[in-house]
Amino acid sequence: PLNTNRLLVFWSTTVHWGVWFFPLDSSDFEKRDWIPYSGWPFERSALDADYAVAHRILGFDEVDYDFRRWRTEDEARRGIGLDGPVLSNFVIHRLRPPLRMGTAYRATLSDDPSVRVVTHANVVEVEVNEDARAVTAVRASTLGGHAIRARAKRYVLAAGAVENARLLLASSSVQREGLGNGRDLVGRFFGQHTQVVQALWATDAGLEGMLGRGSASEHAIVATRVTPEAAREHRMGNYHLLVLGGVTPHRSGILGPVRDAVDQLRGVYEPPGLEHDVAAFVASVEGADAGTGEGLVAKIAERPEQVPNPESRVFLGEERDALGMRRIVMDWRLGELDLHTLATGRALLARELGRLGVGRVRDWPEGYDPTVVRGDYLHGG
Image (cartoon, rainbow, N blue to C red; front, side, top):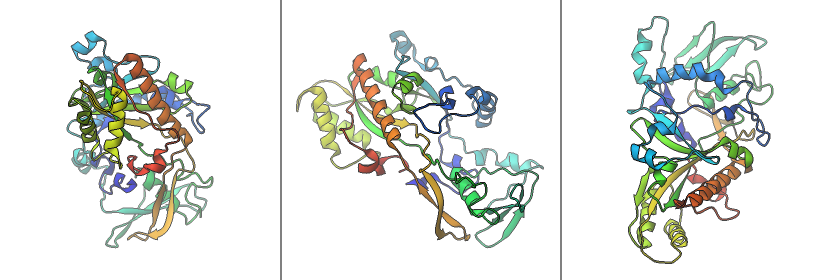
C-alpha cells in the first residue's frame, strides 16, 4: 500500500531505506520524442560535483559503477557479464549496515550552534506576503496543540515529494489554488517505485553472473538494464532488473522446480493459481508434463521507469487529520507506455537469454494488464 512508503520521524526516508545508490544516466536528461514531458534543461554532468558530496555524506569510501570491477576471477575468465547493444550490467552500491541519517547526524546537528532541530513540530502552512512572492514564516503545530512560527532569510521544503505537495496545496490563504499552483502542476506527475517480481527458468549457472547478483559483494549489487540505444529503438522507458536471492538448483522432475519457483515467490508475489502457472511454464521449457533433468530457478525483480504522467497525482481530500490539515489523496496511475516498457523489457530479456542459451522467460499472455488484473501485487500499488 502507498502509505507504507511514508514515515513521520526525524529524517524519515532513511529509516526504512537500504541505502542503494546509483547515479542517473545521461539518457535520463535527454528529450525523448516518444515520451511526453521528457528532457531537462541541463546535462547529467551538471550533477557530478553534487554526486561527489552525496557519496561522502552517505559514507561511501569507494564507488565504481563498472560491473567488471565486481566480477570474480572465474567470471572474468569465462567472460560472464553483459555489455552488448541490448542488455548491459551496471552496479548499485549499498551500505552495510544501512545508514540511518537521523541517528548518524543527530549529534552533529545538535552540537552545531548554527542549527536548531525542532521535533514534533508538524508544519501546517507556509505563510507568504500579499503578492505571494516571498515567504514570511512557516507555521507549525504539535499534536498537543502547541504552535510555533519559524522565520528565516531562506526556506527549503524537504519534507518529501508527497508532503511538499501537500504543504503547498494547503498554503492557500493568499493563492487560493495553493502556493505556486497557478498552472495546476503542484502534485501532478506523481511517480512510484514500480517493481514486478517474476520467476525465471535458467539452464546455465552463469545466468546469475549475467543478470546480476543480490550480493556481488557486501557493498555492491550487480544489476542488468536495457541499454539506452535499445530503449530508443523500441520507444520504451528505461528498464532494469536484478536477481533476488540468487539462482537455486531445482529438484529433479517437474514438481521439484514448481515447488522451488513457488518457494522463491512466496510472500512476494502470490496470486491464485501460482503453482499451476509455474508448472505450465516449466513443462513448456522441458517440453513435457513430467521429466527429469537439472535446472535452476531464479527470482527476478523488474524495475521499469514510470514515464511522466500529469494524471498521476496527489491532491487534497476533504478528510482532515488531528492537526486540522486536509489529508492527501494519492492517485497513482500507470499508462500504456509504462506497460509497453514492462512488456518490451521482458521480451528483450527473453530474446537475449535465448540467444545466449542460458535461460527462458515466460511472457504475459496477450492483453494481460498487471495493473488491472493483479495491480495489488505491484510494489507500492
